[in-house]
Length: 177
Image: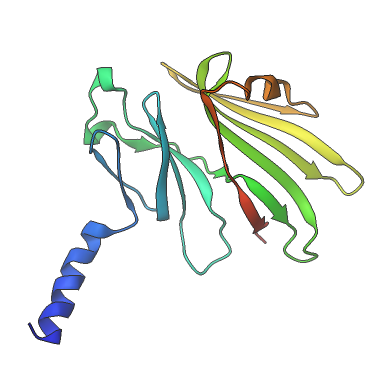
């Protein structure tokens, strides 16, 4: 096979192996508009996906939710849709100018609030003088997502010891400019 044929073959196959397509546990495919897309977990009819919209840019890795339908609903391509929200990827964030630590975020998914399917972010951010704690909780209910934000408290920290509540390991990043 000559180089030209090999190049055409690789080009033709590239869209099929794109990092933008994710396979669910039932082998259903989700086509995303994300780069470096990775399935974190499936939870009560949602796919938790990490990714970013561009490479070689200042955009950090983030968390996205795709509604896939629960097994008892049947999963079909017309039911797969994305929640348009972009959620913080866990980790330690440095200010891009000063390189000082300005945010620490932990993320949990599973049954992280009163035994309910949920995603939980526990964050501490610097307001210059002190560290402020906050909590962002998404409950995955039959009727959709329910969001709750609490500043200066982290009441759901008591639920993270549940073995069905899994922490997604974060890493060091810089805040986006």
